[in-house]
Image (cartoon, rainbow, N blue to C red; front, side, top):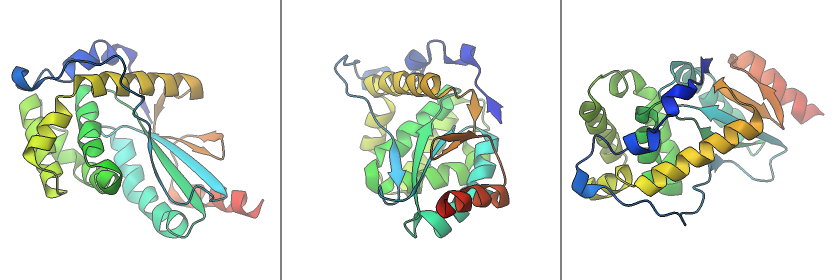
Length: 207
């Protein structure tokens, strides 16, 4: 599990647009509504799962590859589980990735989410912020977004600040200190393999 480094969050909102052309930066709007989270599955499903994850967390990418895809096929798509992702931002790369995913809206969010985790070792490995931005835009374009829309999303200072505010409030409220952290019907769990996760879900369904 990747632990949250609180110092890494200092002035992250300002850094969110640091690698972007200044002319594209948007002014923060104090009235911006809470961004909210994205979910999959039926809201009426008997099991509610919330995952806290960072797009730059290697443990989260492994969880996505080895656990989430099975979860989706066996439980979310069959109406047994309602799944919500809560983004965690350890660094500006993770924040930018989330902003690209959110740029796709409800229809594209989880498709971009899959691409970000599947290609994490490529786009998140560079020390050059502009290279990271370029690779994130490539993922967004491959998902059907356009260049102008991506520029607007990545330079939305108000959204960046709102996301960080929401992330900090959620983490504090749920006592989350690292990723991935998973809640199954309110019970908190740390990272685990598919067999253990499946057993927990099946126990909830049987109860």
